[in-house]
Amino acid sequence: MEAMREATRDEEGLKRRFWDKLKRVAGKVPFAEDLVAAFFCATDPSTPSRVRLILLGAIAYFVFPADAVTDLLPLFGFADDAAVLAAAITQVAGSITEEHKERARNALRDATGRG
Image 1 (tube, rainbow, N blue to C red):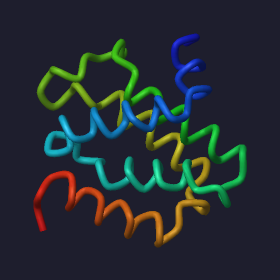
Image 2 (image 1 turned 180 degrees about the horizontal axis):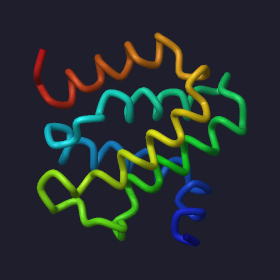
Image 3 (image 1 turned 120 degrees about the vertical axis):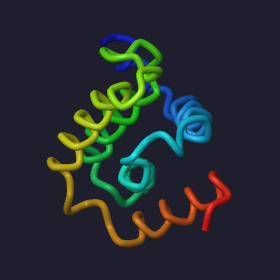
Image 4 (image 1 turned 90 degrees about the horizontal axis):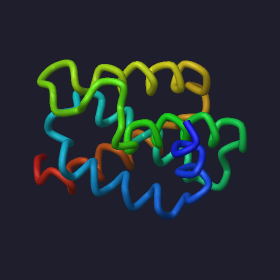
């Protein structure tokens, strides 16, 4: 838990680790668009602090290497990440704008080379 707190304090490091991991696993993560939209919302300066903290915590869990369920397991590896992200998005859904979602679609297209 302390490692996740530290990850949210180092926002630049978290951003770097987020994009590194996303590029490695984007094709395997069915919730990638929601994850990236949450990332853009969390890093948007106009997003309220409470919302940013909730989303940064979920993103830190995604990047954190010691998951409750290892990300290497087919089908189940990202289930815990999806659950944490879904809980976070449920709390802040009104803050994730269409602009964040569009940026996410574009970023994923760029990262995966699809589209």
